[in-house]
Length: 300
Image 1: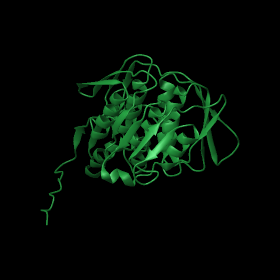
Image 2 (image 1 turned 45 degrees about the vertical axis):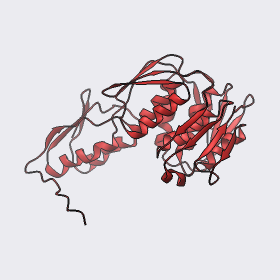
Image 3 (image 1 turned 60 degrees about the vertical axis):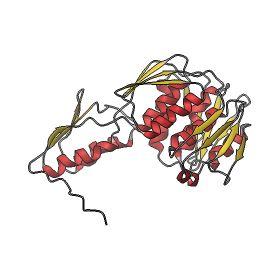
Image 4 (image 1 turned 90 degrees about the vertical axis):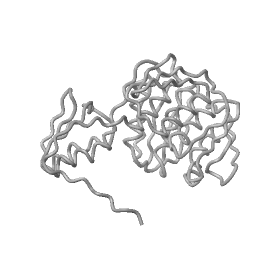
């Protein structure tokens, strides 16, 4: 039996400034777009985590170069398109096993995706089926719709074509198609029939694409059960990218101010964001907190 954990006790109201690490979700999208951009990029505030390292290593397999300069700074030299084939290690990273197969499917070379044994349980079938409809070949080395698998392209779409993916089990399937769609070569309609969970993460993907200069528009077909976007071909624009702090992870520190009647400051809190964690402002405000947001960040 493990020893009890001595929970910390605040003897007085807390008064602290907490620098929250960068958003993992935004870091992955920034890395992806930088790796396929038209020029080199510098990413600042990137999260240093296993998922990030696996994502960067996978992009290097495909031909990009990612130099870690420390302190959350990544310098990215983009790959040539189509990507190189090879072996991609996914670990347990959902962004690697879901965002990168469509990118690999641009290439006529084979790419093997594998990961930790626990990752074999994570569903991938709807995304891979969508890529097969676009011309990819997928060979499973275990259970269908799961890691490990080998994918080979190239995916193609006729002019004005529509690609669709069932994203009811993961919004990452939709984000994966949206991320690759500017690179397919022709304007593409990307659709998700039915309900899509975690739509803020899809909005994050759309904002990342737009921020990199990709031209896209929402298609209103008057149907509540179908979401569609029209994405136009272009390589993303390279340059400087700043990753927002992970607002969800700020929650425990803001809660410490709440329960002790103290004050906590979170630097670099964005004035506008697609992160769902921004809801802390309204939620804790309704619970009685006084919250200010200025150029320095958020203070509760």
